[in-house]
Image (cartoon, rainbow, N blue to C red):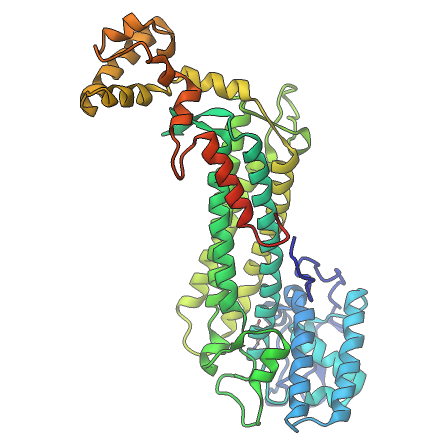
Length: 498
Ligand code: ARG
């Protein structure tokens, strides 16, 4: 889990307070003078938006999740305005108190979210103004919702990445633990889903750990670009007020400011990068899930999944279905879809901000939710839910002529050109297959019919143990190497996760 205490918990959905229905349907939001209530742009408009447009354009139904980030951002902005002499100290006091009240109302599910105020930003600003009067109206000085929302999403995503990074480390640790236990457990390694050569189960698990380690690197790298401040860009061109962006960046824990104001409010590449990293996490977990599904099928029987990760069939009493891994595999689809959604969202937008960008949030939120749940459940599964059937793995490795390459290598060491050795062993395999036995079961005299180079010591290389032990080099499957790789992987976990 994450080492540091997070200021915002992106996993905590804002309590499900229902959106307040329009007070008087049909004339909703209408105030005297023909301007719509709640719109921050009211004076410009002669008539209120229709109800369907209001629903279509509103994001408060989902961007409420940004509330904590929005308040944090507003506090940092207001404090900077005061230090810069743009906002009075009394106004700042009022804003701080008002935002504190709002924070509490939201936490306790008492905040009255309203569609009339379109999004999280306007809902909070309207409430602040209701609470503290003019000071609330001054908060938006030198700011636009364009730089505000970009800031909120970055703050929210930064915290989400930190949570996910901690979870990834937890899953990696569970894989390393299991790999260490099974550093010498032999299973068939596959290519084309055909038995290829013996490997150890620990080696196989560490392959997934390696994928997730790269995923963690990608997330950490993406976080660097997430963690830059857009605020100060205002609507698109910056502001005429003497703001101090570096001060706001520091207060919010950003590593720096985004240099170009047009870029700051418009690009969502940071979210796309995150989506790409997240999609890869899901692809890796989907592959692992696929293997668990195959391994747990009675035909393979390599592993047993604990009952709490499976369900039964409503009609077939004998069934125990691996629902959890199947859903992990299935849910990779939605995360990959979210990546594509954000790429398409971005690709034709002219500079600078466009409302299209409001569509970035639901995919992003759903990606984080999906990853968070998937990592939690897979960690539990790997740590406590897999019973390894070493006997079944071993039998499968023996049945598949998995040591044929070892016999060819043996003949090469005795002087045969590799191609000739390959051919001799291929014929020996065919012979053994006809007899219904493994290569290791053939008497030496019989093996010698296929190559005169076969010596009395040949059985040493035909055993599964001999085969894996001989792959004794960096990255190899020899148990001694797997133990070393597990130790190295553990040492590479973030501090506190080992
Ligand atoms: N809800 C909007 C979004 O998510 C906030 C920014 C609105 N800006 C604007 N110019 N309409 O993008």
